[in-house]
Length: 296
Image 1 (cartoon, rainbow, N blue to C red):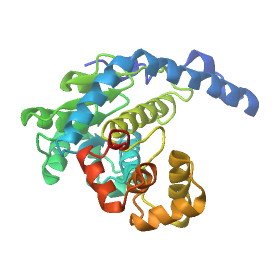
Image 2: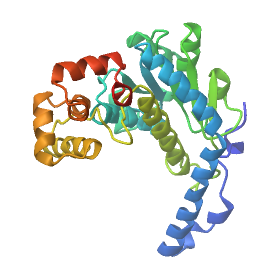
Image 3: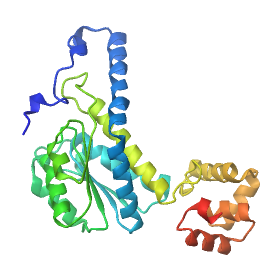
């Protein structure tokens, strides 16, 4: 195993050796400059991200789940991405799952030692009854977190597709996964603080995985989130706006279509564009496996 201090995420950044002597503006400027390396690192692994998205789409279409597993910052990012899928894409909360070493309490406070157990990574997947319709994404900036390795190894044992996201090359989690996404943005501004560039890198990759996978299963029409759930005042207005943009109707007509479709944006759009009733629109949507464009 590569020694921790030899990893890119742990090395001292030569551009910030005097961070404690910089002016606030100088420090902010160098942080901003370093953050440019995040998108460069991600660009290099687009082929691996593409492969991962195809696998996720395949498993979701089979009725499986997208499951993130990680510890610390990486675990929190997985939980965050999972928690934002239901309001954005109308997925059931159990469709995209975020597991973090130490459980829910670890989201807001450090749980010492939780990430050091491979067995815990396995146990958390057993608890949610992992099956081979699912896909597991292991997150670890260092790429060597035992909790994540244990989870990936267990998933492999029962033939569940596995994906690893790390910010070093040739990592343990990469070796344990079917697809290794190893995007390396380089040493942190603050040595070893992987909530910075490494955190941003992982967050952006998660954005890509979940968003484009949801496009692939019909959660998007044009670039509109047509499965948004109008669960509060802001989202009710957003739903109306989406129907208006998709159909070029005025707000009152959009409101009526949403009312007639029980708040289902996709159904409202199809009703308006094809000039059909709710029952017919629902049937067309079912026949097109939830894809608005195919239904039209």
